[in-house]
Image 1 (cartoon, helix red, strand yellow):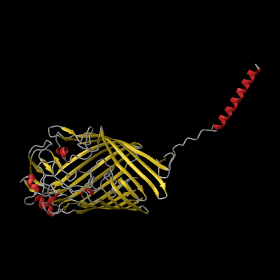
Image 2: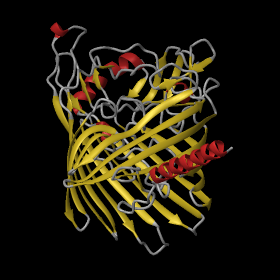
Image 3: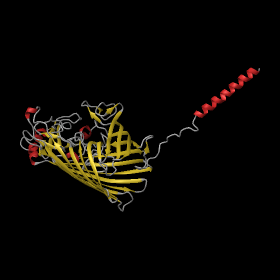
Image 4: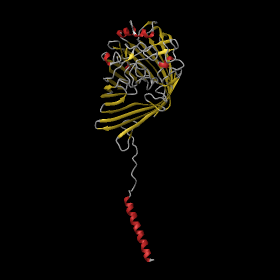
Length: 506
């Protein structure tokens, strides 16, 4: 027993020694977890990315929309099957949308490096186009479609994707020509207000911005005109097919050549407690293709157009806390999209039909040219204005309006309306007055209810009128929108839209 006892005691002593050695290897306490820390350098909502000195902020919204008397979402019944205003168009359109934005910022010895990205996913039910067989099909922006930007079950979009560093902005961002409120100076839902710059979903650009202090800044930029700023160069020597709603009806065929020069934009802004003042200018190169179908037919020389815009926002007005008055005015020559912006109508056309026997035309290209002729730049001017009023922390309302005027040169009118002109050749001998000039007026109002923070319900109504200059009767063939062949009175047109929205922002 004595040897066994000695063996057990020795084994126990060995275990004690081993346990002590292992305990010595263990830390006295667990390492602290690296929690996400608040970053207060750039305002509320920023946090440090763990293990880095980069701050990040996530944001976005979920939105539900419905438009009444709108075949396309918040664009108005002004063209195509919507403008025909018959049974082939929708009386309402629905959309659900989710938005996500990511903002990162890092302090460096050269200043803050910022990246910003915003994407949206939309489901739109409606937005139909006629297939010419007495029924309708989905368009490219609708569920189940396969057109540009369409994905299974909806549509994916990238609004912004840019880098900012040492005063430079590089990537897809709001145009420097546009005002801070963009198309929505009345906190409006309607996308298609005329009277100023757009591209609120971002345009590719390289920009340098200098801060002069006291809220004064200046920017110079080059930006891509292809997506948003080419309204059309119409070749009047190529007669379109005489079908209204699908062709340019005497205004020729779109004949833009390749883009050879980016648009050049400059902006001066003063942003202080009393409000904001901004002056913007843009230069836009119009590069046409050829007189005919092949390069040996030659073509007119390219020609520069330009646009200028002034904008003013007045804050702290006596009507209430947070109330504002926002106004802007613009003039363009050969740069139409800086007035009749990208969401205000299809490129080169802003046409409104009404009823069964009435029709009106209003086309807005950058320029036109005839056989062996030079570019004739189209001039426009316009304005927007809004009064935004807060009744209390829960209720707010806005009243807003917009106006645009389009004018052609005398040489352009001779090509279109003179002897052998393209307009009478297409519309027929019943045209008494032939004048492609026109005006567009828009007026609207909305009411917004915010029962809890960041949850807002909006109701809005908008009226649009086309003041066109044609008179007489157009003799037109049938088209794919259910319009029969026959005589249509040329006259002014109008349309209205009602919109509702629920939006939760986070």
